[in-house]
Amino acid sequence: MKKRFNTRQLALLGLLTGVLLLMAYTPLGYLNIGPLAITFNIIPVALAAITMGPIGGAIIGAVFGLTSFLQCIGVGGTSAMGAALFAINPFLAFLQRFVPRLLDGFLLGYIFQGVKKISNVHISCFITGFCSAFLNTLFFMTALVLLFGNTAYIQEMIGGRNIIVFICTFVGVNAVCEMLASTVITGAVGFALYKAGLVTKPNP
Image 1 (tube, helix red, strand yellow):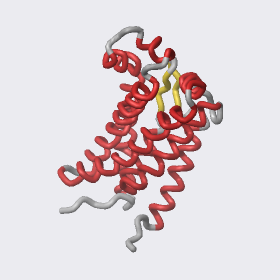
Image 2 (cartoon, helix red, strand yellow):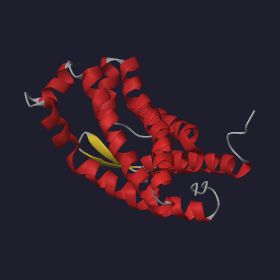
Image 3 (tube, one colour):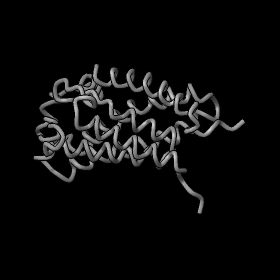
Image 4 (cartoon, helix red, strand yellow):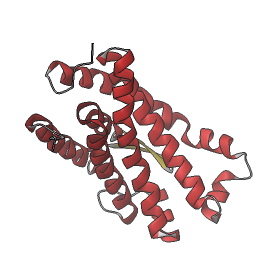
């Protein structure tokens, strides 16, 4: 059976897991603004997808999702929204926190590989970084509305507004900051990893 990861990629997988856990359990990973937080934990997820494809992205995405869910119960920090959702339905809170991050990492692997076929690695890294933040926000908010949209907690937040308007105003500056940070940092670090031989070269 073909090996999915080589030794260097396995070492990088462990390193990115450690970096993500460090970010998740220190102020390095989140900047709390209101009920939402600007998260930089999407960056290790993007880097895993770039260097190890969909499976690597999904693994680190799952780690991110698990740490996000644990914040609902006060492990490694506290999320006001997470705690409220957990009180409403713990299982749905797990799905809302975990699945979007795992799916984000999985799809990023295909996004990087697809863009790399029609462009160069540098541009592919930047686009993957942008998509990491964009998809994280899209999946997170979609899951929030689908799973908790009828609850009094979310209905009070919506306040009778159109759901699209609510999502745009709710994520607001947070999402823009995440996209900018993820695009720039992932682009730079991803290309450095390519130069180090940790990213498969594009097909001619």
